[in-house]
Image (tube, rainbow, N blue to C red; front, top):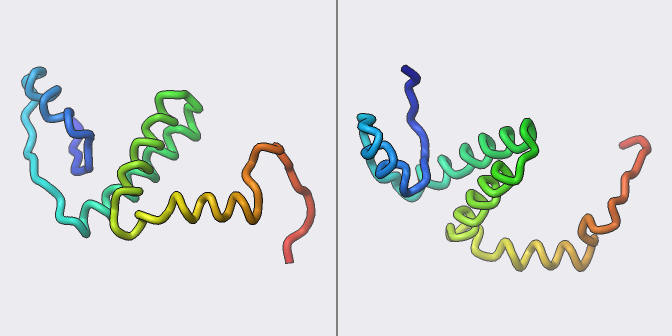
Length: 101
């Protein structure tokens, strides 16, 4: 049986209860929650990179939405819009080739 110690979606304990799976549950501190969300973003991004599925992209977006609610990131949407206005988005599908430095 695999061991785990990670942030999970809110309804996972209910699902595990219905399956008769035993586990320990606790609520993260605010500091730990931020760290765990960042780890979850890395996990979900890796899974999306490997699978490329809409389900995995939905998981990435869910984690990003949770991060956006944290005090450190409440203005991220404003920053995103500003960067889009100043530098553009990715709508043009532009690929550059060259050398850095």
